[in-house]
Length: 295
Image (cartoon, rainbow, N blue to C red; front, side):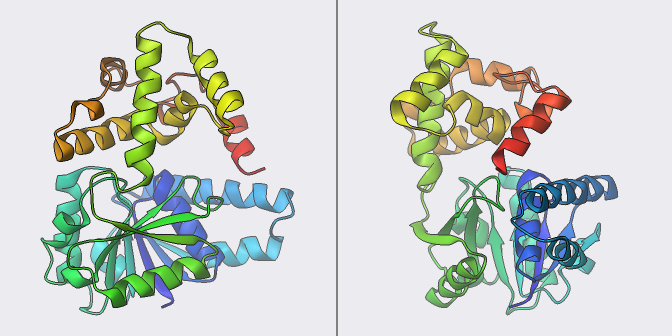
């Protein structure tokens, strides 16, 4: 398996494309606009420059990675010949179902269709295709080039052969695949999002301030990043979407999003991506934060 298509050039998509390309896969990065693709490639270039500066890769490695990437605004052209397609579009059920319906008609019947969804049912996604046995979750962590974990989520009909192919592929990317069954939030977000939501509730209730809450969790629980800062990096809109999926899926009030989170998303305060969330992210500050993640 050497031909990989990645749908979505945003934070997760460009990170996934970067990682595959760095390990010498031929990667087709697909998005609806050339501007989005150009931004994705610029981010990959900057992240590769940081890795060169840290002597983690050479200039030749950087150039080879970039040479392994090509971009497309046409889904049909981008997925042609792909042995694996990884969807990393917005965490929206209707959008993902639409994409997978199209992929099913455009891709070879042998192509594995994977979603980087952080909470949406793989079984539900697979149901809109004629190949549910070849649909799987491949949930990378952010930043993808650095983080080791890949949650490999089996839908109800995902075959063992598909799982083994994706688990083996993950290992070839120097990742650690962990098998997870198909329930809302899977493992990572089922545990992480209630913690983030509770941190927001703690702020909302006036128990402590943003820096104080994050400091308690960093120094008291040895977390590398406080939950409010982490929410900013994930994207508050993404956190809200995941909590809604879990709340709807489990019908349990403990997953109900905090009103503060809902209001911040409605106000466009989404974290790093919008320049403001629980913390301020001016361009210079944002650059410092992102650079720190690649140390």
